[in-house]
Amino acid sequence: MNRRKFVKLSALAGMASALPGCIMDSLDYELTKEYEAIVIGTGFGGAVSALRLGQAGVKTALIERGRSWLQHDFSPFLPPNKKAAWKSKQFTIPLVNLTMPLEEYTGILEEHHHPNMSIYNAAGVGGGSLAFGGTFVTPAQSIFEYVFPSEVNYDDMVTNYYSKVANLINISHIPDDIYQSIFYKYARAFKQQIENAGMTSTRLPACYDWDVIRQELNGELPKDFLHGDGMFGYSHNGKKSLDKNYIPQAIHTGNVDLYSLHEAIRIEDLGNDGYKITLDQLAENGMTIRTKQFTCKYLFLCAGTPNTIKILLRSKHNGDLPAVNSQVGKGFGTNGKTFFRRSIRENTGSYTAFVPAEGVYEVDNPITPVFVEAIPQPISLIIPGFDLKSIFNVGLGVTDYRGSFEYNPDTDQLDLEWSSNGVDKVIDAVKNWCDRVNSNNEGSFTDSLIIQDQFSKNVTYHPLGGCVIGQATDDYGRLEGYQNFYINDSTLIPGLVGGNPAFTVGALAERNIDHIIRNDIA
Image (cartoon, rainbow, N blue to C red; front, side, top):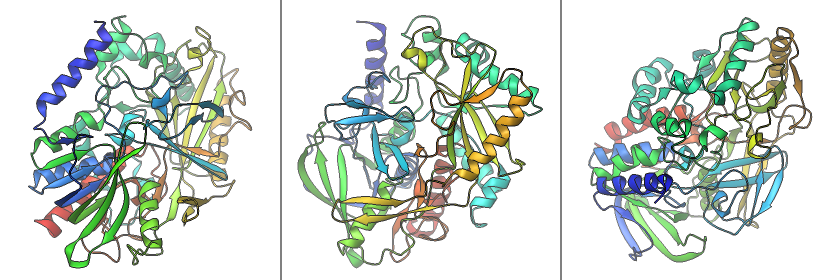
């Protein structure tokens, strides 16, 4: 048995021994069940909600449309296989717009293509934590307070809830021996260029087991993470995704049953009797095996943007949830996201490690506040050993523009209204930032080798909003018009957070569920 297979099987065995037999799969034939609470979605919002409900003694079903990835047998970046895409016969790699045919499967990333915007979100037990880069960024206070209503207090969030997520997942900074390796030469070059321009770069915390990364560094494991492969998940089982912390701890309470490959397709209001959820149980190829109906008193919808919105608007159209308010579907944002690339004189390494290591906040940008990260560009997975002498970046900025979703019954999909100029303000701010960095570093310039017109404006991995807190819900995620119905996911975020959103989604979910358990359930 090779070492990679041994690591996978050992992790799977360890996880199985830690759980009290509350994981439901295709062998579960019960067509109707009743729970005190149901949580739909296992990303940061759903995983947090399920753990805290389980600890409070609430009998809970945790529903996930995707499969379990405990074996972490993910698709490679290039070429992707069927495990890359959610129920699709093709996958389009963003930015380069390379479309590849695939066998249909319940894979990791779902694509939503709309005029002027393509949205990518994850499917699987652990949600977006399976496929995101793994960085945990606390937003700058000024940006947070600009975005959120005053009822969501920044100091309270930092003191009580960001710290709660950080401690449970056990996030940490990249150790120096890994950071100083050839695989982070691009990050060190970014840091030096930032300092040359009189700015301060920040080392970003992340959710990885650095001993596993060291095994790659030492040649004990094949180099996946260190070669920039991780878009569809990290196959060496070294990422502290939610299926390694929040979710197994929830199951271990003995009060939470996890149902993977169960897709919620209908929610009905039963009045004083609670809610009925219709579920399609899926095979791994995406075909429906059987249909089930679960009921509950307390319902937590945490399927993320855009799927929470789709479920709500479809249920409203069908008359199952007629009181869904007019704010549902509004307030969508891309986290003010744009990708761009800068060429420099210095070598940046023939391989770029997957998780970003350096970022810089510029809250006083003359156009709008921005956060800029140096991110991997795994070109050497295509052309081995080739040094691009460049730094790939993502800019996340503040913009007031928001889009909106409407349900289309003819396609059973959402239509997105989004302007082709939706992130232009952010792009202008990032151009201003680039000009100042380039002018202080000889031989540096912003290029268009990968991205047409230098700055992307039509793709996001950070879809946010659609059930904005304080608008579609109250200040703790209670859905307006319904009792004991809660939204607790990325749809609450008002379009942007000024940094990578996962940390904020998790912290906000901790805040909300803490309040809900104390005031509605206890």
